[in-house]
Length: 196
Image (cartoon, rainbow, N blue to C red; front, side, top):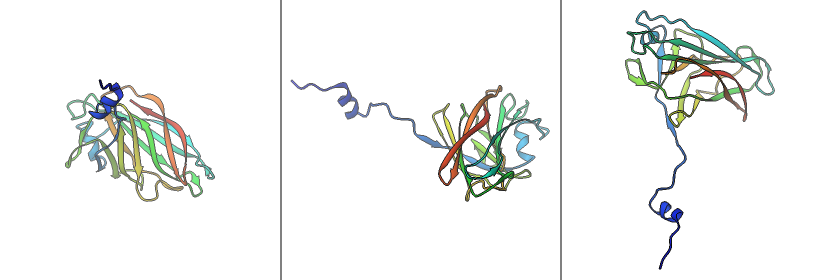
């Protein structure tokens, strides 16, 4: 009589649990103040800002990760939701180390019509605001998991700042958390951020 372990049977029939895979997020470039219209029909928003400081290894000065939130007001498409917007600012840093990606935990994302192109997960304010470096790609692992946002070109280098980029959540009370910054050359550090 043949005997099979449960592990062999599960493996044979593809029933073993799989590690969650990173799924690509839809990233769209937008302009301000037009993007504000999905949060408020007056196309204006009232922001709440906080800052996390960091200094890249081997550099001098202080870099900042700016966390910005603003509420969506009915009858706008995102009425009752909260926008979570971020910017990596290296204008106060001297040296050669660039931030090429950031990673943070974010709950379920509310897709929204940030531009006429349709629904998107993440918006990047490439006109009408601060910055010169955009988010090229972003991924998320699990519905309440880890987001990795990858900056374009050589990343956010000393003397530069990223564009503001954001996501929307149904969670309207932000909480303190941390963000991991990935540098070129390879290294990483963490600083403060606010998330849903």
